[in-house]
Amino acid sequence: MACAAVLVPGLLRGPVGAICSQAALLKSTRGALRHLTLTSIMKSKRKTDHLERTANALRQEVVTAAKVCGTANESPSVKRLRLLVADQDFSFKAGQWIDFFIPGVSVVGGFSICSSPRLLEQERVIELAVKYTNHPPAVWIHKQCALDSEVAVRVGGEFFFDPQPADASRNLVLIAGGVGINPLLSILRHAADLHRERANQGSGYEIGTIRLFYSAKNTSELLFKKNILDLVNEFPGKIACSLHVTKQTTPISAELKPYITEGRITEKEIREHISRETLFYICGPPPMTDFFSKQLENSHVPKEHICFEKWW
Ligand SMILES: NC(=O)c1ccc[n+]([C@@H]2O[C@H](COP(=O)([O-])OP(=O)(O)OC[C@H]3O[C@@H](n4cnc5c(N)ncnc54)[C@H](OP(=O)(O)O)[C@@H]3O)[C@@H](O)[C@H]2O)c1
Ligand SMILES: *[C@@H]1O[C@H](CO)[C@@H](O)[C@H](O)[C@H]1NC(C)=O
Image (tube, rainbow, N blue to C red; front, side):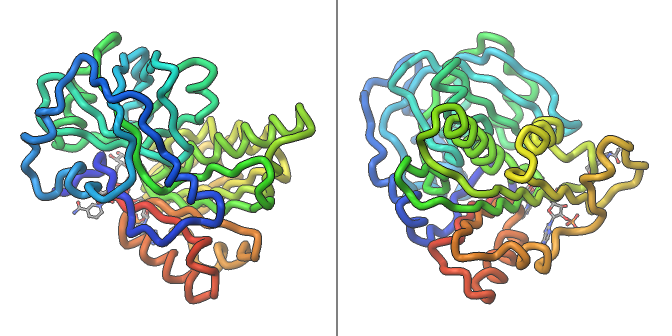
């Protein structure tokens, strides 16, 4: 069985204007690898391995030490991890993933960061949410990882949102399926941070409206629903969400009900939000990603405005 925990960047479709092209500026700041050696990379043999699949993706060179500073269950199948990354030179862009090196585990994991770049700047913390599979890094996270466990991480990926202050204002449509919410939550949180900063300082990037379409099997598998609804309530008219469940078997709580639609996200509801100022970010099961990116292309959305990341 393929592994939900391993993230594979989609076919890169060219930079999203000035926004994605920042990837070219990824710089390594330090070559030293602490605590761990890279021999583990050489030992990963699976063809479907994260490192092999992402071999051509942009990634930083530096591997940075990190320490587990929190774990929690986000759903019956997904564990949330907080990592403290003390090194001030470590940074990432909203939407990017990390190579995840675990001492004693020869396979290197690949996980999208779901927290915002500001959380790292302010608290030196990044967050991951990892679905249980039999992939060794996911098994380690679910069964062995504990507070203060030491790992190492390296940032990569070309799926991100990183506008500069003078860039043109854009609306965002974020389309997520299952664990594909991870990079999109980071982007949503970053968009909220940009909006807060602009409101507080009167300067900085001016973001348009942000709409999240997020589909999961049922409400218990809808990850981060409270965080998402908190953002929707903090920024009415600015951030909106449409949550979908496709295999719900139990009644939906009164609190969630107003936000939930039963059935898949439809092409029609996405089409209503097409405009020249809108960027589309898609991450979910590959057939879903293919479907929506194709539909958008058919609706004449320029390819540079459609960004996607595929998971296997
Ligand atoms: N060989 C494999 O095992 C394999 C191969 C490809 C993808 N995947 C899975 O893709 C997964 C992504 O995460 P997940 O497991 O959390 O996802 P998931 O629970 O299987 O799906 C998440 C949501 O996306 C919806 N969806 C799927 N295909 C869609 C489409 N074509 N159009 C619209 N909506 C669609 C699903 O609706 P429905 O309930 O209606 O499907 C569900 O609500 C990975 O976990 C991976 O396991 C696995
Ligand atoms: C939600 O879906 C998951 C995965 O299919 C399943 O394991 C779980 O039992 C479901 N929960 C509810 C409350 O239906």
